[in-house]
Amino acid sequence: MKTYEFELKFRLPGTSRDPELFVERLAEAGCTDALVGIGQSGRIAFHFSRGSKSAFEAILSAVKNIKKAIPEAVLIEAAPDLVGLSDIADILGYSRQNIRKLMMNNLVSFPAPIHEGKTMLWHLSSILIWIKESNRYEIDERLVDVASTNMQLNIAKETAHLDASIQKQFLAGI
Image (cartoon, rainbow, N blue to C red; front, side, top):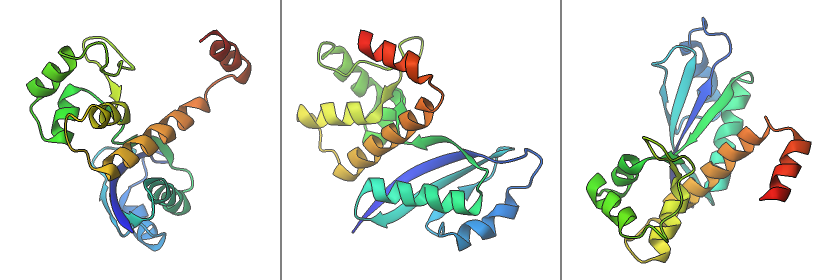
């Protein structure tokens, strides 16, 4: 069994409800391996350090535990997933300048961002897999598994907003 670290952020039902009310229910539901953050009104965040056979199993069980304790909670984001250059540097323990140089020196093969603008964003798993495959740095396989699983979870959550017929037409055009 491996230990996986990840964060889950949820919107709480009814912004006037005190998130402290949920803390005991969360412990009873199996969230004793998480630090709970309740600093933002109407939100609750969890930093898990969960033992499991796979990142998928760890993250899925955490989501189920939270939904058992707070059925009306809505998942906002699973992290790490969406990252900028500074986030990538922090996660890997390198400077932002080092990661930017790596990107600029490998523009053809460096993963394309999912958002390009003043701030560029990538799925962390794309960056980690590229770094691993190009033998740039040692990458913890658990981090790759967590980032890949979180990307799938975040994308799956967002596809619930899609019109199936429009999605089919878009995918046919790609």
